[in-house]
Image 1 (cartoon, rainbow, N blue to C red):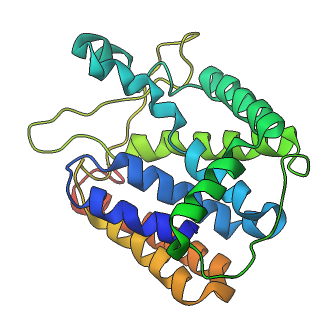
Image 2 (cartoon, helix red, strand yellow; image 1 turned 135 degrees about the horizontal axis):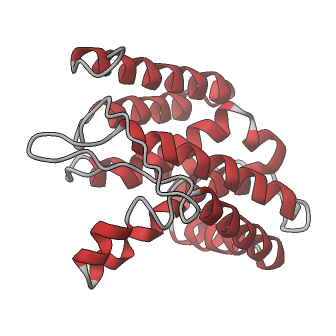
Length: 231
């Protein structure tokens, strides 16, 4: 199911200049696969990682009704340690209590039978995934979101957009723009990894790890070509 859903993100990614949501999701999924979350906690654990990877961007919601608030709050209100801890606790408690990820997954599988290959996935109920595990996965996935945003920033006619990880206790901001917004490279690498995982599922963790290594290598190379790295 995850491979199918992940592949559908490509249509959205290639049609936008700002592809952070699909890329954040794919990073979370690859990290979960690389660490074997799917083996220990089933597809729900991977779903938590993919979902949590996007939670810090809740501070972009003001864009809907007030651009000034969006510009002042995005990469601040949700992109900090305090928000990450609080939202991870909420995610862990609600998932353990209601198993809403499992409910959504079952509905998707019923409506989209092609999303599965007919094999029974590891069954992990909300009682088996303890709240501490859910919180831990969410914390890790959200923390990874911060450096991802730090290294993807700016571009032609666009200024760098720093994050404030210690807000509201400190206004210290950080940004290290290795690649500009709209760079298709990370999307291609991440989707290539998902396609490889779909073809060779017995080597899921290996391909996920190789994908992340390739991603980091690409970021470093682009940083060097832009004159950002080691400057």
